[in-house]
Amino acid sequence: MSYADSRLATLEESVPAPLWRFVWFVFEWIPIAIVAGLWEFASGTVVQRTILPPPSAVGTATWELLSTGEIIPHLQVSLYRIAVGLALSIVVGVLLGVGMARSKPIENVFEMFLALVYPIPKAALVPLAILWLGVGTETAILIVFLACLLPIVMNSYNAAQDIDRNLIWSAQMMGVPSWQIPLRVVIPATIPSILTGIRQAIPIAFIALVSAELIASNQGVGFEILRYSQVGAYTLMFAVLVIISLAAFFTVRGYEWAERRLIRWA
Image 1 (tube, rainbow, N blue to C red):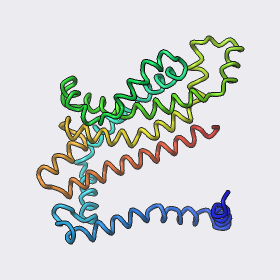
Image 2: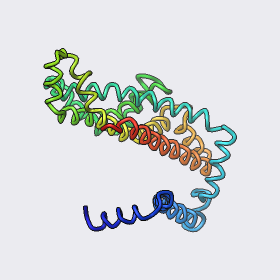
Image 3: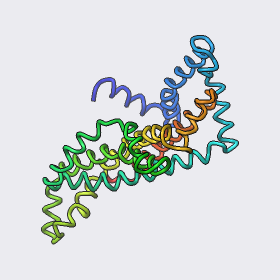
Image 4: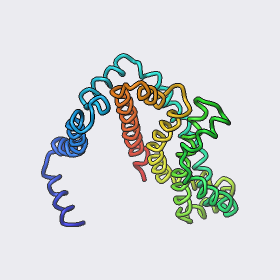
């Protein structure tokens, strides 16, 4: 431990826990406060107020959209698409990652495919997805699924490769069939890394979802952002951006809270 870390640990021990949590809360929000202050200053001075509405106006519009319930149906549609796309990527990603780590033929088949396909921007696949699935929920789910797949695959793959071989040998000695080892031994042992991959995929899911809804949807928050921008309602457009940002923030924080309790034993 460095000198600075030891001093910080000593200070943390000497300060009451509620006060320490409040101090850290303030420090976490200082960057956001600075950005909001610069934004407020730039609105109407550096950039026209009609194009860059101030945070005060955006905050009011955000409250109006939420209190009137106007944005709620679109938010529900978007969250549903994220949930389905992310769930599919978790199932496929974990099975594929563990399969690649446990089977050389599977790794040879999919490793090159993932390396070639993943760098393609997922928004570039939207027109093709529209031809396949049409405009709507299915296309958005497909884009979210593709965007979230690689982080989960790679975390599952790396964890399964690094698993303690003694666990596998012990299971084999206890009579566990070879075909059951991935499900009964490998996947449970790699849960912490799998959860990390899911944590990385959640923000990606929101980014991919909005990108897809901007192009291939007639509902959802991405569609609302596009609709407000087209009619010049930039305050409402920024308000929808704030709402989806808050939804992503609370989703990640809620997931982290659940993750800490799920892998308390790890």
